[in-house]
Length: 283
Image (cartoon, rainbow, N blue to C red; front, side):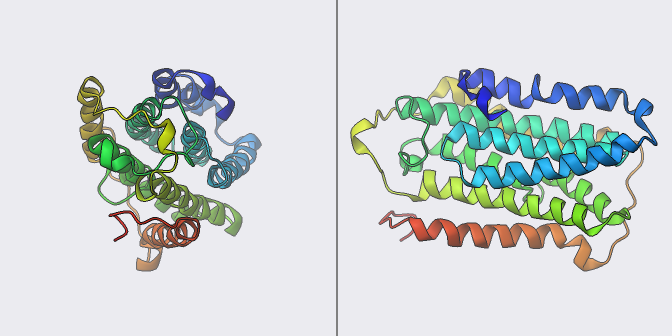
């Protein structure tokens, strides 16, 4: 999946959000009646949990901007496949739709950033992006936070519902750990990306080819931004014909928030070690 990043960025946005990557998940959602009570599903649950874990770890050691977003797509695919193998195809479809919104927005913002950097994809060269393209940086940050599952954005509704259904089901501790640790790792590489792109100083001023905002791109990006704000609550009203009854103690209900805060704090600590910037943001 990350090796498919040689495509142009609009192609990557379509591939990672709508067509090629989600085709296998969609096929398994369509044929999920044939797969019930198979031993294959338990194997698939283990494999997709490990896929989430591996993609989250790999994205923390990656320096290519599009490859980080591709690995986060791989992590969300593991989430969809694992909730599908637990026998909830409607939740998998719901997460597929909400993930398509902010992932397409994320790739479009990354394409604007790469074009502004005169086709450099390495995030170590970037920094201080938010002074030059503030609206694109706004879209990038909001879609990244929706990917993390910040409450009341689009990703929160699907991801929180999936994680609470995992907490309700009687699975062992390893699956539980894989789910929650992968959620924390998502927050981790998002904070890392934000530090490298927004908080850091201008690293290689020579190669900067700084444009203004691309207003042709901003029209569609604001449409996607609006969708990635409202589509979670809208779809959870529209596609579930009965609400999920989730009965958990308060610490289990808040577990997603705890893991997100831990990922935010550790990502801040790790990213703050490498960055000695005199940026206005840090002042």
